[in-house]
Length: 206
Image (tube, rainbow, N blue to C red; front, side, top):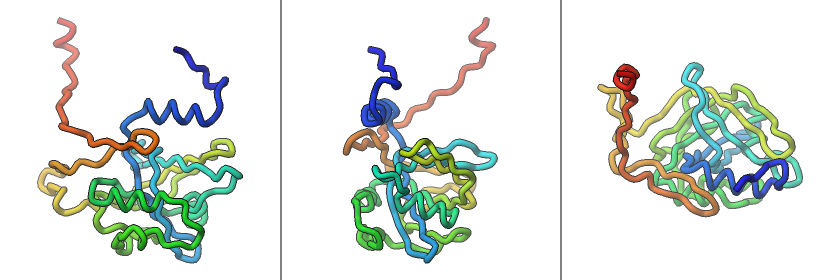
């Protein structure tokens, strides 16, 4: 089956991509507007793209009528956001923040999240998140009228103490791995990790 993307609508493109590129790490993103009002929303078009500079990317959809949603507008106004990795402890709260609340509603309180001030940026940080990246906008790419891609430079990472091995510089997830986003309303556990060492070319060419 070949499907030419030039021949299908946006909804089918989205369905094919999100059902194929799995699992994806959802990011729970906090922002503030120019008046300091906080907002929280999850994004599954999210990943890391560079370590020098350290960059993460967010694909932020616009409203059907064209204007930016709160997260996109807040990042445009302030240039800052915090991207939180999602595990089972904050999963239910993340779902609350995905609801389409009217402007001015405090999603963080409704989700039951405790927050603290960030170190380098104005948006608050969720205390119980396993990892949180404080980010400053690096560049925004407008993709037509439907979506913006925001690259953010990581200024600081907050890693929960029980997960970080400072001696080795490792994050040790143990049995509490982050959740993976699939498609529709489906998520997945990552399961048991396994090693895949890269072979030595010399061994393959003997």
